[in-house]
Image (spheres, rainbow, N blue to C red):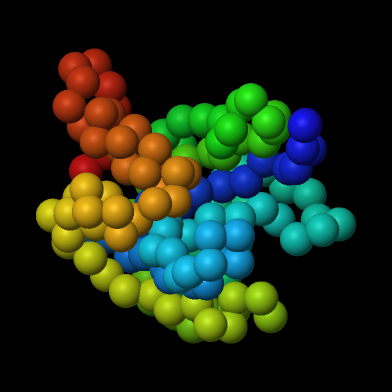
Length: 151
């Protein structure tokens, strides 16, 4: 089975050596899920991946980022879909009011320390693949020589 879906953006909102995550109910898994903000531009709208990242960050958290740095591009499930996602690090955050879509009205947001996020990944609290792989990419970029520093 091959599923065609548009690429999306995953945004890692970094502040005070921790991250802002969003939680929402995910029907396919039958439970709530902590994740980095993510999504694509609304149907009928076009734009760049960085524009999609800025829109999703503001929509889901209310934050605007003074800096949005692209960390990379990955595929979600390359055995079933060509869909991929651009990963952005959002820093220099300015708070505001979220403007969530109708399907996101039950969403909530919370800041977690880096240690808490790592524990949530280890204990299975965070099971979202794009969130886990985005965090791994951020972590590796900070450890591998000759990579741009991301925080």
